Image (tube, rainbow, N blue to C red):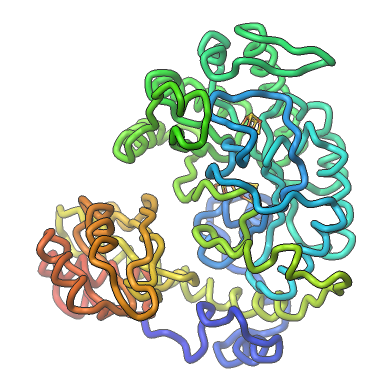
Length: 493
Ligand code: CLF
Ligand code: SF4
C-alpha cells in the first residue's frame, strides 16, 4: 500500500484550505454519506459513534485524534500512597509538575487556541492535578464554557470516584459521555494499604473504614454511569505485592457493573517524587509483569493497552505532548474559535480510515495465509495516521505489535529518549534505545542510518526503512510473510 500524495501524517501546521484540498485529492468528500469511518461489525452503532474519535477509548482512533487536558481542578478528597500533591494526579498522569493551573476562563482560551492549531483535537479532558468531581465547580464551569464555544468537542473526566455519585446527573446533562474512575481495589483491607485517608461528608476517615466508603462510592458511581449509557473506563494502578493479584477480582467486579474498558497502569514510585510508596521502597511492576497480568485478564472487561500515562496538562496525540506550545503566555488575551482546520481534517481522516481498515484486513489475511507458526514482535516509529512515518532518530516511543498465526495486534509502547538531536546521534542514548527494545525482532521506521542499524543488528534486532509511509499493518504483514518464506506476491498483497 503506497502513501497518498498528501496524507494525514502531514497535516499539522497546514492551512484550512490546504486541508480541504488534501481531502479532495485523496478521495475525501464533504457529503455526509462518506463522512464517518466504518464501525467494527460487532459493535452497537451508538457506542461506536461515541468512541470513534476518542483516542483513549478506541485504539484505532489514537492514530488520528488528539486529547488535551486542562489543569483546572487542583483540590482532592483522597490521599493515595502513590501521590504527592506537588505533582500531577498519578491516577491519570505521569508524575510531573503541572506547568500552570488554570481558571475556567483561562482554560477556555487555551482550548480555543489548541483547537485552532491542532486539527486532530477531539477530546477535552480534566484529569487532575486533583479530582475533577471533588473540585466540581471549576470542572463544570470549564465544560460549560468550552461546550458553548466548541459544541462538537468530546468532554471527558477522570476521578477517584468518591464524589462521583453526586454529579452523575449533571455529567449526563452536560453530555459528558466518557468517564474514567481509578479503582485499585474492591476489598477494603487491600484499600487500606493504598489510601491512608479520605475526606467525605465533612470529615476525615482513615484505615479500612475509609477504603470501604471509597469502594462503595466507586461501585455506586460506576453503576449510575452505566445506567445512563455513559462510557466508563477503569484505571487500576498495579502495585506489586499489594493489589497485583487482586486486580483480577477488580476486573470481574467492574465488568459486571458495565465498565467499557479496563486500563492496568504501572505504579510509578520514583523516590524523587516524594510519595509514600517512593520513599518506602515500594517498587513498580516490570513491563513483563504488566503484560502477564493483562494476558490473564483477557476475556474479562475489555483491556486498554495504549495508555501513555499522560500529564494533567498534556496536549496532542497520545505519546506526544505539545502543552508547552500553548502556555498562557503564548495564548492571546482575546481569541475566537475557527473550526475550519478541524473540519477539513475530519473529512480527510474519514477517507483515510476507510482505506486503513481495508489495508489492515488485507494485512491480517496475509499473515494468516503465510502458514507459519512464528510470532514476531515488531516495533514501529510513527507520528500518526497509522503509518510507518517517523525517522528512527526522531522517535520518542516505539509502538509494539505482535504478528502471529492469529493476526496482528497492538501490544503496547516503549518510551525512549530521542536519539538524534541537532543532526547528531548520541551513543549513550542509542545504548538506552537498544536496551528498551529488548525482545523485539524487527524495527520499522521511515529512515534509519547505518550506525543505529548496525548496533541494533548486533543486538539481534533487524531494522528496516523499506516500508516508509506504508500502513503499519501492511508493513508488518510483508515482514512476517517474508520471514515465513511465503511467496513475494503474498507478502505484498
Ligand atoms: Fe484524558 Fe483520560 Fe479522558 Fe483520555 S487520558 S481524561 S480518558 S482524554 Fe488516555 Fe492519558 Fe491514559 Fe488517561 S492516555 S492517561 S487513559
Ligand atoms: Fe493524588 Fe489523584 Fe489520588 Fe488525589 S486521587 S491523592 S490527586 S492520585
